[in-house]
Length: 137
Ligand SMILES: [Fe+2]
Ligand SMILES: [Fe+2]
Image 1 (tube, rainbow, N blue to C red):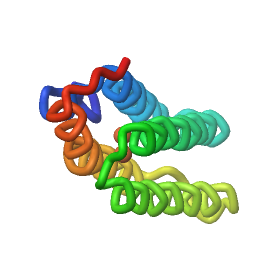
Image 2: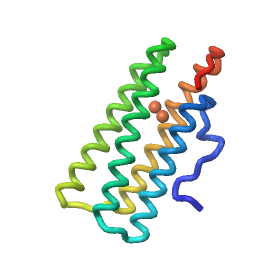
Image 3: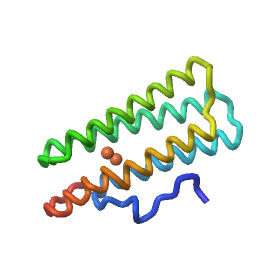
Image 4: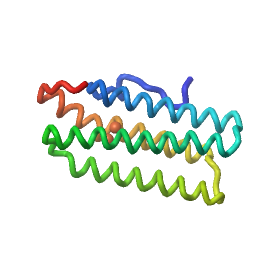
C-alpha cells in the first residue's frame, strides 16, 4: 500500500491537472520510501527539493488556467497556493539548517496538505471547468 494513495476522490476531471497531481503523489511516495529505507540525508533532501520544485511548477500551471478561463475562485485558491509554498520553503530551510530531519510527522503534514488541497480547492476548480464545458489537455 502506497503512503499516499491516488483514488477517484482525487480526480478533478481536468486531465493535465490530474496527471500533475499523480506525479506529486508519486514524488511524495518516493520521499516516504527514502525515509523508511533510511537513505542518507542528501538523497532524502533531493527528493524533497523535487517535490517542492514540482509543486511550484504545478501551482503555476493551475494559476495560468485560472486567469485564462476567468475563474472566480482565483484569489482564494492562489492565496492557499502561496501559503502552502511558504510552508514548504520554510520547512526546506529548517531542514537545510540541519536542525531537523524529514520525520514521519513531516511526511504526514505533506500528505495532509496534498490530500486536502486536491480534494478541496482543486476539486472546486475542476467543478467550474466541467460546468463550463471547457476542455483542457
Ligand atoms: Fe493542484
Ligand atoms: Fe491548487
